[in-house]
Image (cartoon, rainbow, N blue to C red):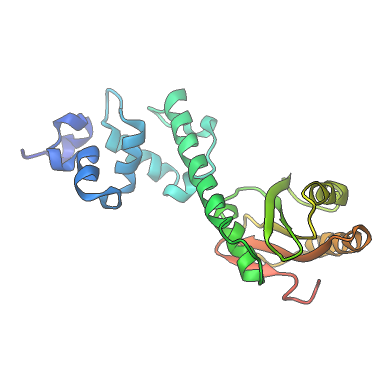
Length: 234
């Protein structure tokens, strides 16, 4: 079957040659053989009266400059795209939430934190995609094994909203011997600000009083990180 490229967008998936249909292609060659648009097409399933699902997914990816741009998208933002209504927006948000949770679960396989790099690896794959600052707490036992991780604050972090009581109440709830604080810089630059340093010193002093040591403060910026312990601040 010969396909006119100019009319491809109007074709139904069932009109495509069998080897070009995403589901058949996946079953025959594996998921890794599919393009990003084809993978999304299998989730969303149907296009609209003007274009097939592959072309719709091409537009979605173009609008958000790839999968990374979609990872934290809201339903409201998705529904601004022609052809995306509540059902499809909800499907995409669910898909990417599953992806983010899988990253976190994968990270929790790191049972023991013995270096700043291991702490960064535990949270980086998830936090590097966040569009606003989030402070995440890693709670450890006496052998530096991870008990639990939890997001404590969200938004522009400063000393007026980062209250030690919320951080240490969580640490006490999980019977933590020590903690590592992590947060992200959406700009991609992990360099610590004066406010980051002030917050760190404040938490360090509170940790001494509580008997729960602040081991490190990790700042994530894109694929990079900065350890305030390595910088000699802690």
